[in-house]
Structure formats: C-alpha cells, structure tokens
Image (tube, rainbow, N blue to C red; front, side, top):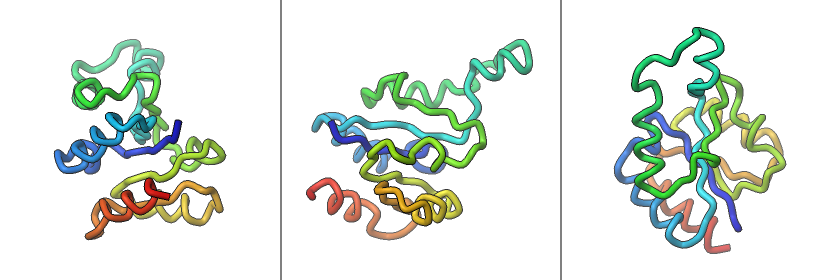
Length: 130
C-alpha cells in the first residue's frame, strides 16, 4: 500500500485538503497525519493531565476521513523528516517551508509539497499517477 503524509495545522484542517485526503483514503492509499503537535500521552506524563480538547479537532478530522489513529504521528516539535525518512512516503504536504526544505535536502524519496503554493493538488496528482 502506498503511503502519503499530511501536516495538520494550516494544512489538513483545511476543507480543500480534506477533500483530497479523503479521495486518497477511498482509493486505498495509506494516509498519515504527521504533525508537530504534542500527543495527549506526552501531556499526561509531563503535566499529569491532558488539557481538555487538546487534539480533539485533529481526531475529529482523522475519524471523518477514515484515517486510523495508528496513522497519526505526533512529532512533538521534532523535525518531521526524522519520522518520514526511509519509510517510503510518496509525499508530505505541509505549510511549513522549513520542514519542506529539510525533507528536500534529506535525499529521501518523499516529495515535499507546499500547500501554500498554487498547484499543490496538481503536484499530488502527478506523484500518485507514477
């Protein structure tokens, strides 16, 4: 199964991006959310509790789109390439240019795509049609 990755904040929280992700889920792609956010489990350990509704927005979108909770990676402010590298992701869609530059410079096969640049959806379509 081919894997793809989406950032959440300012990316997969957008309805237009959700439509693309849902189509990929429906076509059988393994869709991941790779976010810089901190997980609920880490918050419980560090602060002895999780702030109410901390990641509820992310989980609601994931559930609605059919993205499994096991396919959500909280990088906890670490560089996303540390998770993506050598895992055969086709692409990662993000709004953070620094994250995208790190992916590009890593030499990994994962293609960085900037959601804030016109034509991002066309780039995804080119990659998945290979």
